[in-house]
Image (cartoon, rainbow, N blue to C red; front, top):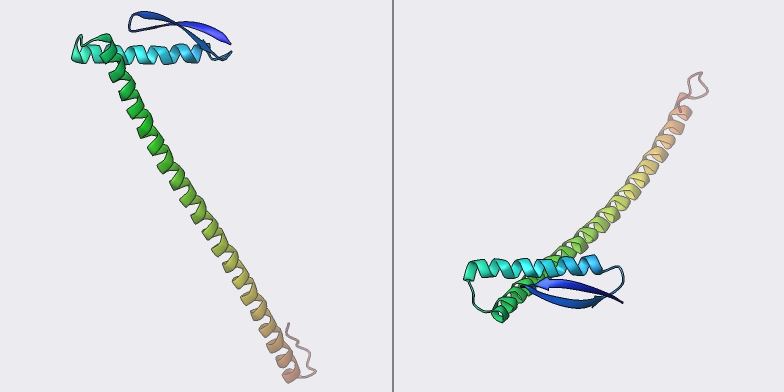
Length: 128
């Protein structure tokens, strides 16, 4: 397990993280620090604890909104997949019906051709 020193709201914190996650943890701490600084610029000096709590709540709110958006997008993907499957089923049904119709038409043409050949008799012209 690795250790990282981060600065949040002017204070140093030593934090543990999984090996290889040091840069990610540092970036997260920087994001929180920037959020706190933004709130300080907006609201002034209202206390370190209060600024930290406000930053955490706004980030939690954003996370909740992103989770809702993700669920919505997952629902859309599921609906699209269902529509694709339905379209593929209709396409297969249409292809089967078309193949059946073509086979039936070919049979009828063959029957008509045989009848015409019989009608014409043993003439030199044969159809089909």
